[in-house]
Length: 94
Image 1 (cartoon, rainbow, N blue to C red):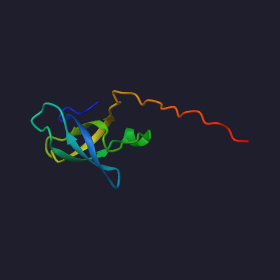
Image 2: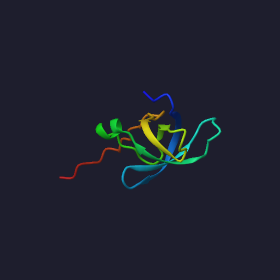
Image 3: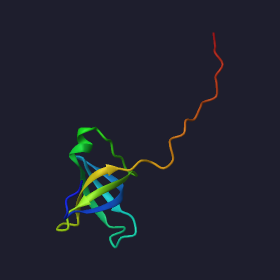
């Protein structure tokens, strides 16, 4: 649960940096849409080994005092499930 004085925003990871840092572009219909923020992952994501890659949609908390940095608190689930592509059966060679 976020603190009373944090700003909760959504964004898309555009770059993965060393040391579990990420560049996130804010999305949505806010005034800061398109703004790029430096973010790190929260303790719960780190503890549960949640992997974050470029292109993932995430929810972040930001302090109202520093709008250039944030903390990733949730990784959004993909809308379309991954489809299983079955390869054609190959003939056995004896």
